[in-house]
Image 1 (cartoon, one colour):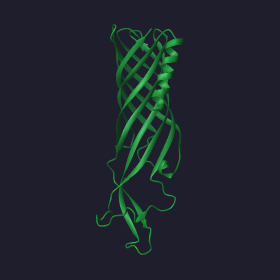
Image 2 (image 1 turned 135 degrees about the vertical axis):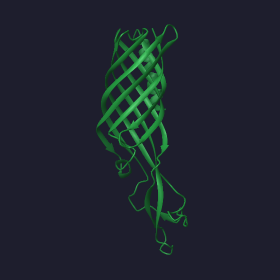
Image 3 (image 1 turned 30 degrees about the vertical axis):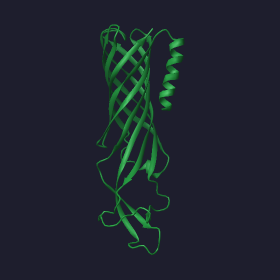
Image 4 (image 1 turned 120 degrees about the vertical axis):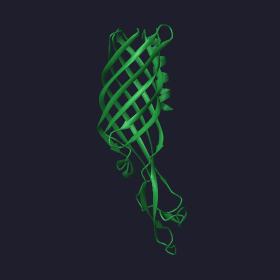
Length: 225
C-alpha cells in the first residue's frame, strides 16, 4: 500500500513538472531459478520519455503469497516436563511473497515510444524483499499428536523471516500503441541479486529466494501530455 501511495504521489508531481508521462498497470509472473517457484502478481509503473526513442521507467510489483509444494519438518519441544512425548516432529510448508521495485532505461526500435509497434530493451536495477513464513500442520508427522498449546519451537527459532535484495539485469519487450486508446505491452526481465541481507535465520534459510529471477510482465500503458 505504501508503494502505491508513493507511485501516486510521484505521478502527481511528474504530471505537473514534465511535459509527458505515462502510467502503466498489469499482471505478471516471477520465476526463481533453481527454486521451481513461479509466483503471480500485479504491477504499477511510471515511464518518462527523454527523447522519442529513449525513456526512463520505474515499476512496483507485488507477487502474491504462495504455499510451496515441498514439505519440511521441525522439531517441537514440550512446554511441560509431564507431556508425552517430550518432542514432536511436525511437518510444515513455506508460504512466501515477493515485493519488487525496479527501474532503468528503455531504448525503442522500429517505432518511437508512443507510436505504433516497437521493440524495446535496456538495463534494469531493482530492490525487493522476499518474505517467508512457516505454515505448520496441526498434528505431528504420525498424525497422532496435536502440538498447539503443548509444544513450541526451540528457543531462538523463527517461523517468519525476510531477505532484502539488490539486483541488476536486462529487459526486453514489445509494445503496440493504439492511437488515442493507449498502449499494450509485454516484457521479459532477467534480474540477478548482487547483494542480499536477511533479518533472521528464517529469512536466510528461505528456500523460495533465488539470486536469479526471471519476470514476465504484461499490461496497459496510458500516455499523458
